[in-house]
Length: 77
Image 1 (spheres, rainbow, N blue to C red):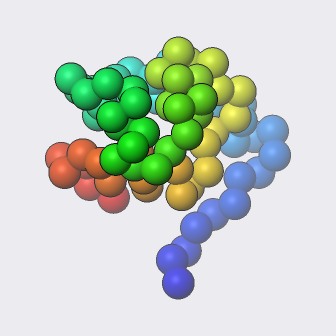
Image 2 (image 1 turned 30 degrees about the vertical axis):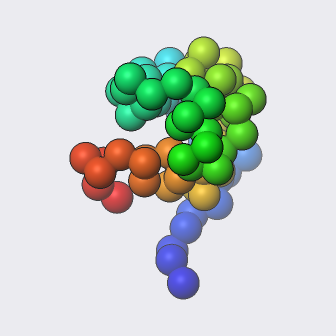
């Protein structure tokens, strides 16, 4: 079992930078379409769209982050 820290309500949300995550997300997706990326990662199109638009109000789940980052072999955990 992995050691995953649960977010501390408002303190983690306050540190969450949706614009930085959007920038990283665009780099990971690269030339692929959102539809193609969602199919490869099993992430919902709405989540990926909100992430890329920088409109997420809170950090995505750890599982979603792993799926997102796991689609790019250059990302290290």
